[in-house]
Image (cartoon, rainbow, N blue to C red; front, side):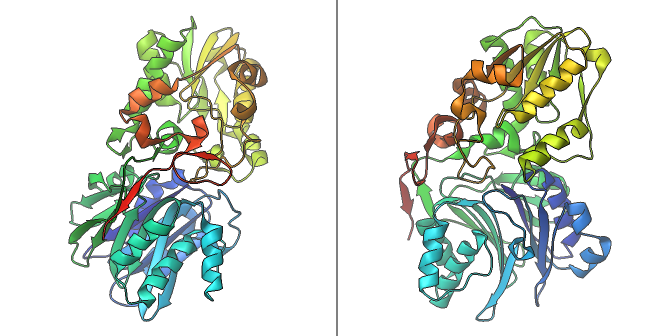
Length: 464
């Protein structure tokens, strides 16, 4: 999972790109990159690290341009140790200056990589994003249009991909026909066009979010900020990632018409109806559990009290590159307030339990602070199966819900009681039908082909 942004304006947009990426930092802590241009060669800066450390004022001055794209990334299915893998990727081909950034995960990348290598193509990175660039190069080499290239991407690439693409000083963006990963469109008060993974990146530069880019849609923004839209492919049903709403997106984002905060708050209220408990206080695992806890408190009438304080200088432990680092970061990240916990029955709300080790450590922290009981309520169903479309849940073995039921998980993490939100409650809160959601991590049934897994692929029609 990553965050992407693209901008076109009449004046320098390098600082705006920086601010937009800063707003998307929660989507990737491993590396960041920006590529810009005006009417000449592309400029770029890419490095491992957080946005604030990668881009200095001096670097941003060197990135001045009227059009650009940016990317924040965390490692998912590969170890992105090489700088060459940091996005945006950029290259020159037949006098075309091209840069692209991608959020998602291509599931048939090995097959496509073998196909291109048989044609004599050489890959310079381990990133599946380079597959997209190869498709575009192949189409341009045959004198086809960018629209043709995007349509071919949608025809042969399987998996998830939201893409921003910079070609010869003009911006393109497209979203896979399933709509796995989010992508939105907006304008600033100065008339700049911005395309970003989440609406909060548009808010962060004083822009106005206009709409979601549709699944299968391609957007073209020329140098004068004129926008053209083409539907390249249309699936009979979408497959919006359910984990975006559960955890990954920021709560103040609007994704595919739903305000994430309201979704989580509604789920929190449903937890009271499904599994009420006579606790003393409602507490959140900050920050992703907060909206759920607010909903639970409002519905139950039990006071919401901060019992855990988050170190604001810590990133998201879920997207750290190893389990060892995730576990060692918990004690630094969360500190209890003993006076709020001592001898109390705590209703502790979190968004999800993936591996179980973090939850076990948090329950331990609460008990060491003197909690009499720790009742955990979770804002998602049990995560039972891996994600193949960009979220760092790669194998059945690492998922506690793959081998244990609710009672077994409760015992494993040491909670007094445990309840997960039902799938029906989650779907109701979203206001999106089950048929238009990717729920593979919950059901083990995937909407796009995955080798060795049960799939119910969508029917996709391609325009000519």
